[in-house]
Length: 460
Ligand SMILES: Cc1cc2nc3c(=O)[nH]c(=O)nc-3n(C[C@H](O)[C@H](O)[C@H](O)COP(=O)(O)OP(=O)(O)OC[C@H]3O[C@@H](n4cnc5c(N)ncnc54)[C@H](O)[C@@H]3O)c2cc1C
Image (cartoon, rainbow, N blue to C red; front, side, top):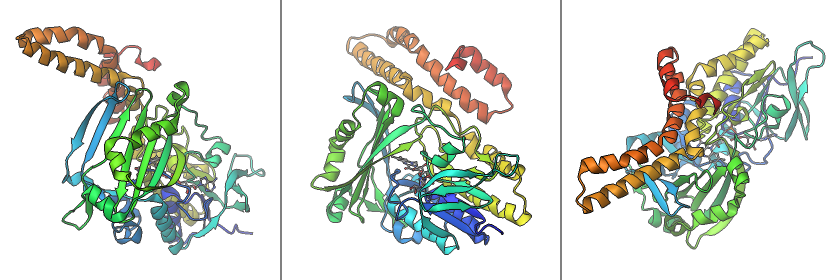
């Protein structure tokens, strides 16, 4: 008897919905499994999606209800905290930057629900179920996945697409992913409700020429590696009367330093700009989630098995520095959904067909972005060391001038400080080597030079 489903997709996040939509559009029988009663409610995630990929995968997103009234960032106030957060360095991207037009603020509770509806509209069947394991084919000789075990029974299909996020049980049970504390940043999210009118006044949004509300960048995005590696940001959504606040920290560092994350989250809430944004608001939600930002591990080594494809966070994808991962999940979801259709059309479910998925993403921007080396210098203290050095040199430059020192004198006195910072510069060279490896795949001589400048970095 032919299986009831052509493809089973686990997880109705951005990756799963995109895969479901593309497969269903090509007339495949698609079963989309989601553990939450309403897709989106078990997600926390951040608050930003990229416009081009959203519109490519889901035409009509721009005019969707879930998108109406959502502001876009006009500016970014990025600050790196030093000295137990008493001193910060940063940069500010001022309002009006065109780059921001390619980015949306979103409330994932709403957008995931909308994405799911598009998949269902295309023909996918949505079922609330918690997938707990894979089903192996015990008849054949090769290791093949033929479906999933869930709390609502077993479901079988020639293709399973796992898009169930960073904590994926499926990827784990299939033996493809087993993340440790070095991979994960633990995110904490607070949602506050604030009177929409009051919030709008506080944010002082202005209308861009395309009618979209623009947030001037009122709340600082704070990051740092002292006392541990952390990041924090707050996003106001005036039409929803919601402020979404995320605080995340490296799990490995957090464990080592015995960090109380609520205490750290509360510290961010007390930063003047954030405190002002939520003043008088009602605290309505708190949840936790892992993300792969500041990732020094990288993606899964293998993203498929016969019968199974890993999409998005389930495979640990997402750029290792920032883990803007929804765009990657959607791009891979489209790839997986289309490949499923190709397999059905050709009636070919061979390992080579599943391997095509990995060959394609590796040879794309997703594969090229897997440069986990560039996260090292934020986590090993090198970035702090460099900021301290710059701070020290700026300080002694001014002091020198107040005391009639010449510039040659000032430069010479900065030399020992620069030499002291050399190990940190080495880490940056190590990071650059990772980038160079990708950018200049065929330029071995350059890599050799960087290796000479940075001996011993292979051990990192
Ligand atoms: C604090 C934080 C901030 C972030 N900020 C951003 C940002 O601003 N922009 C950005 O692009 N990315 C951001 N990310 C990363 C982004 O959230 C992920 O990369 C993205 O959501 C991955 O999409 P996905 O579809 O692969 O998985 P997910 O979005 O994690 O979706 C997985 C889905 O599977 C369901 N599920 C899980 N397990 C099961 C199971 N066993 N059975 C059935 N269903 C299951 C979940 O309920 C969920 O709906 C952030 C992440 C966090 C934690």
